[in-house]
Image 1 (cartoon, rainbow, N blue to C red):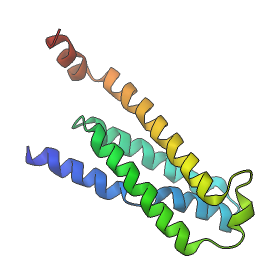
Image 2 (image 1 turned 135 degrees about the horizontal axis):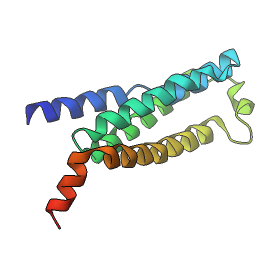
Image 3 (image 1 turned 45 degrees about the horizontal axis):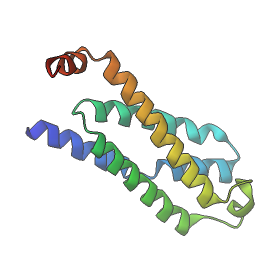
Length: 128
């Protein structure tokens, strides 16, 4: 039981990193979309970690923490360039859209990870 909560708290702590902001910052400041690659790798790792304890609520809470920390960092560190760089969306609109897409992608990844996990399939068959 203790390991399960440790895993959940680790996922929440890792999710608190504003990885969407970091990707957007790299794009706006350096003009490179390479900042989004670590964001995608981070998203996959979080999905994998959330599947182990079957903790969808931890992942949802982590995504909320990430969105809020990204929103906070964006409020503090955005420059006037950010107002037009992410057209047709505003910077905050892009943050919301990216966060929503990440949440949908993570849900799909969790579905794939659970479909490949024989313990999850066996667990479902026991309840039938």
